[in-house]
Image (cartoon, rainbow, N blue to C red; front, side, top):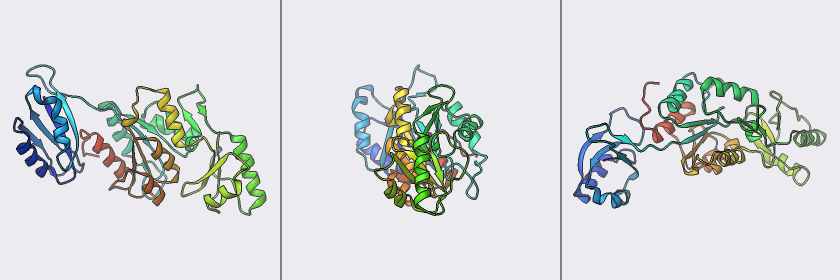
Length: 317
């Protein structure tokens, strides 16, 4: 059998030396380290006596700079190795994450990259956006994502609960909260497209100040997207929506969930997934909630995340 060893960036050679010296039974057949490969993952193909297999992964993990180890099983002698692959569920924000840097337009490379991740490598791709229901549905169709999605900052789950989706938010209470704010403050205006289960207003006051004003009066919470203020029911957020999706699909293991985002709207998503990742252009709250910050901005950061967990993704995008 073969083994794929993932290392910290630039530490492959150090790990390889320690592999050879500490595991005498290992015969390294090949090391795949392309010059222009930007992901932190490298391949080391190894043969080993089956009697040592049970302790091998544990031994390798103890080596400094080793991040992960994957076993490659060979089904039949003489046939190509068949890796035991992990199938991840990626929950991906839209605005500021897969959009172009200077506009709200989806980066045109996104469709091909998403197609390859789904069709070639069978990962699950779920849009998790603050955008309204209909635009998210259209992007799901255009990008050929998995048949479930999150809209209106988690107030709507598309693909669950029938044709109209599952509403987690209470539009009536959100509208009542907006009317209350209009009475108390000047310059509170609703903005954007019509929503089914949340309210959205202009960004004249901070989300914190609005939350203090609404506290103990309405079961809603205000969140700053960077361009507007979203008003959602307290149980309607991206994080709660992800938990409902995972409950609906028990074959999607939590430890293989990845969240990629850039703003306060993504904080609850980061808390709900096993691997929260912020793109480089994310705000400070998103970066603080994430497990790590990616090296690329917008789609470049998403590509970096994809390649970290799917090294077979090519570089020609």
